[in-house]
Image (cartoon, rainbow, N blue to C red; front, side, top):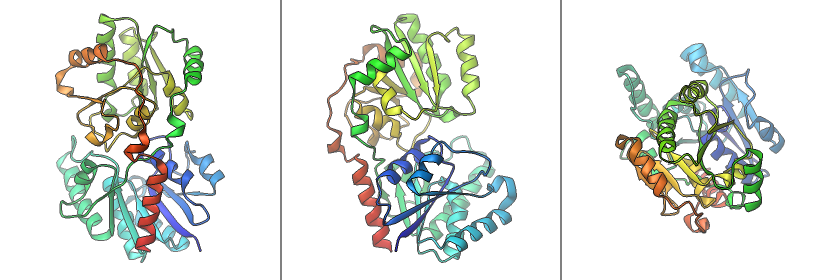
Length: 364
């Protein structure tokens, strides 16, 4: 009999936690596990929806808490859990995991896992938001029976200090991200990147925490010292149009490429010469793992957990140092790719899946 796992995720687009889940789902034994994904919008087609259906999974959509209020949201959760008789609830939605875990316990679902993927914490929170977060933290603590995190910082951000936390590495398909000269040539030719041009890459949804405004400022300052650079941005989000407008205002549109959400990240990343990642906060930053697996040098903010440095070559810079410090680091970085064996860093998705399966089986 298969183990039925419901992942509380909110949506299945190309973002960090969602990509991690898809990496797990592709690798896990589907003769032993059925994966369901709880999302909060019936009128959206998600980036990973077709692949989920092809692999035999199922997206279950219910209205979000914001749309219907607490009472109807709880009712929808109860109905979903009653109808499907899940063995495992695996919640990935940070503080918003509280109500699903509460309902799961009331529904007598034996395994209730909460998984922290970020260090958002109290960043720019109002008093009301802080109160909501603290109440959610209490509810999570009382209703979950397994506490996972992608890094030590992500665990400390969501869980009380006395909780035992298991760190689950955000594994990737290492072979898929190995550097390919053939793919590099193909992508650079497609986007007309000259051989002598240095291409800076960034992958991340266009939201405030990814700090695209600062990235554009860095790039503008960089071009004032060396015009031989281009910037390629992958991702979508609510700030995309604002960032495009900012680029146009600064006459950078001929130097910056916006690719949106793409399904071939592992191919495009070969075209990069350097990866820059000035996030305001991160649970880990799975794209940093992918970039290093490709051999790229990475420059990131010191808000990113140190565990993300699997190559030992990542530069961590303060956002408070301003553009000049970041530009100097870019100019002084040797962009020759590293030849690293990432298998030694335990970021192979097969290892991650084995650990998760062991957790599921142990609790069952």
